[in-house]
Image (cartoon, rainbow, N blue to C red; front, side, top):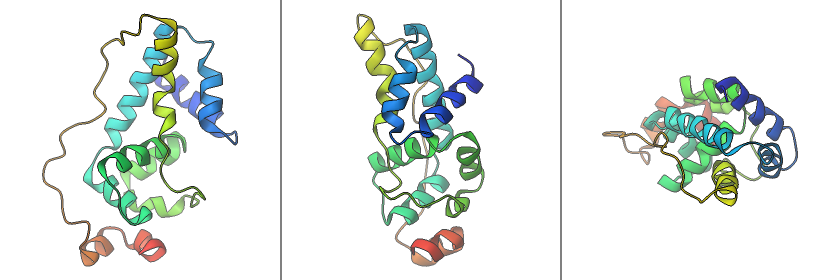
Length: 160
């Protein structure tokens, strides 16, 4: 599965009222190899978004965000499609340009769909793939309103 095919599946899933259910439906006919490849692309996207700058944007939008919450925020962001994902990764304050979701900026389930289907069809031994996370190093104080307002002026205006 190519990266383009991965994002096409994300776009198809997000066009429904139930992205997680639609993603499961789209991935169900796929082979274990394709499921592993889909999961590798999902992990690469999580890893690409895993930065203090993106975390700070999610923190402002949600009014706080734990490390698990940040993972679910990145999942939500991936499910917004390639263009939105890449825009927010390159300019985290541009999260302000996306429609505010009624259910919040977090979504957990889609990142587990491929692994669950894979386990159901195989002995459950997941092939090695890329890590979801990388070392972030030193960050800054998300509770410093002046710092957050400087870094995320549009998001702070909307959610601050």
